Image (cartoon, rainbow over all chains, first blue to last red; front, side, top):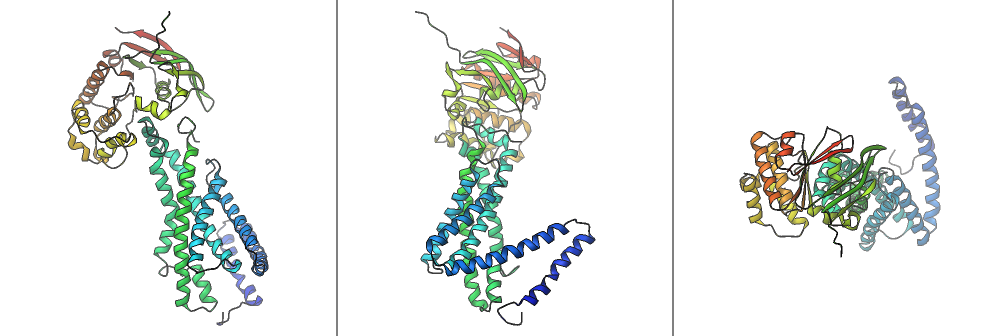
Length: 256
Length: 223
């Protein structure tokens, strides 16, 4: 990148040849992914171009109400996607929305109070994007785990119910395992930061010319905020969703 | 004035369907306090489903079940299951140690651990309380079944539902469990005992219920 902070269009076109390498692999190995690769590459470009222009417009439009509405829109989309992973969960979108909002709210409040960021669109939107998308992934994992555990651990739950336990003590092991499943990828990636990878934000800052010593401060902030958000969101989502697997007579629902 | 005698547990035209398949149909039965009813029938005839209905782990598709004259639906299912204990054919021990299992019934009732009751039950099942610290994965099938049984009896139930609990036990363990069941029945616990063993079914029971293809085929008095 010649030490500069911008990429020109010609360079970008040359880089596009990397997609051709992927296509060659798919074709030669008969993976039948060519259509999907072309579609996703075009889609990525279109989405990113659109988002680039939208963000440029939004960053100039310094209304806190507009920023908040945009954050809510992002959260709703994330909640909708996360809920798809737990189809057995009643009110999955609502539960996901509440969980992500809570995680995001707590984390952003601390970031703002510590004066690391301000409630300015150019800071709050990218940071919230990272928080919300991490929560979405964590919730997807939680839902997948909780759904499969309630299906596969029927014997354990019914044994506890038959002893007179309420649905919470009967499900507590499953709830905790699911929270753990949601949190582990973030914990694991925190453990290997700087050793296995230079994460996105830090890489971005370094590429933009910020000194690595300065960039790590931001990365530390990102790591801590993702840990807090995934734990809050996973905790709330699992504790709100386990009831979906029981009926009003506190019986475990049959799942196919 | 006419005095009506209320059964302890009464099933009226109980039907249970799952996934469009009829498992039990039109089951009507009165179970009196102190009854010892053995339940026999071929595999898949609906015996376990019958017990699960009695413990409210499932609800009938049609018909009603009353307990002390009150519909099951009027009870809190959790409270109901504390008085109607269910022992599964394959015992499931959770946690790491036997102690985790023995503490559980006390914990869910917010009661303090009653060592005397634990000692009493371990002795009834010919087990040493040294087992309390054993890891559940190191127990034999017979030991697991007895621990699961003890776990269900820490707070004496009014009705005990036993689902082929001796089917995987050797002769000695079977004898210990049978004797314990007989003692409990003599102490006033009502027993519903599903078994495959015809001889065993008639040993202590006062009534023998035969279920086949989801229906009651016969109910005979044994004493």
